[in-house]
Image 1 (cartoon, helix red, strand yellow):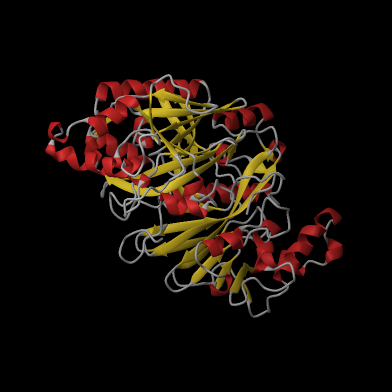
Image 2: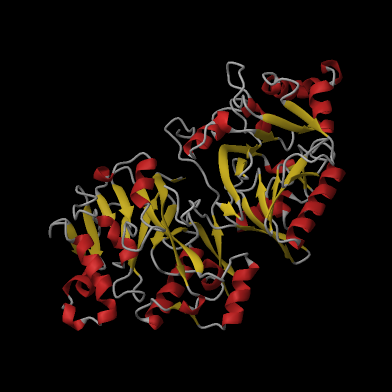
Length: 288
Length: 288
């Protein structure tokens, strides 16, 4: 779809299922009732989308997050296929912005043979996130987590130090693109704000994991949040800023395509998904 | 997506824009406020999806509605392209169920050269709908409406009398598929109920045209409704039955993919779109 001069394509990588017990702060009965109200089945875990976003700014062809590739089995790993189905080739991507280095966002950087999927791209990672995932000595990592660290390190391995840009919170990355620190889910978890004309598009990663629960109950945290207090504060801050500014939002784990707006509702928020729209060509008619 | 043993593919034909004034029963201010609340722009008409549905029942490959083809310009007419992109060919379709004969639902039956798009399909149309659109003498039709009648007649022209099945309200069409009269929008407007295991899927046409207005205010009618009182009664009946039965719903003018559920909310209803899910292969993993 088009947002001002941005061409935005949501790329479905697939889905993951997580158990209801991963959501902390409400009783299981309350959670089941919230999900049941919106016809979400809970008996086999909650189906949760994994989305990436391709944004053509006119100057840059930017991919935010890269999907899970083969790190987590056959329900994920379709991002590159869907990128190609949308008419682009991975070699055309000049910029990859990573919200964080969890493997469902980073494994898509590398092919199974170890080569780079995006050989012509600069990969931007917040300095604090890169330090945590790439520089921590393996012996200092709990054994249960070592596999995740290995996956992420393998995914980044094919890229040179020059291609991998570790940036500071206030660095300008690209014209019209700002990083917005949203630390907590991981040490350097970050959203990206794209500005075009009067429109703002906030692309976030793991600010929340379930739209049916966490917009209405933003205090609920998830098992995977590294620092729950910080993650909660970041979520509240982003929900407040995106709803107040009527920003467009794109979310990695919102129901595909994960594009819409945040609206204030009662004392909390609700998610308003946008209507699907085709991408328009220069004549103002839908591209085939 | 899969619903019990049904494989359901939503096919986007495109979109149409209609003016806010087409919705009758609320003030323009109230309509604008309802739409603005959910971030729907109203300054250039309301963008409204045109969807068709391909349902593989295991026994039959069924298409409900066929899109607008070239009847209404370049924003519509993508249904067959999207059918092919989903891995099927028009020649494989054995059954076309038409909700009604408005050209945005029927023009897709014929190619620009006048040949049949679905040469191997039986086309089911309610008897009362066929009589109105096909048997009314042209001189008895108001001049402003004659173009619509011509479009529909051209769309059906390539099909033999045997292929075009005019059915009565209680006829059984296919195993597990019932017609559900929802007259009013047009004289024979009809929904189709697919049953599989414990699941029910109601595929409707023009039961309503705007989710942000007509679920919460089902009394609102649209300019295009032929018999507004009958259309309103049909809408209330279908909203009641689908919400009470927790049926799956697929709607021709609901935001693409237009699949979800109807929920009772306050004294009316709300629309709960379903989360996108890939179609699974026999191994229980997503098809590529």
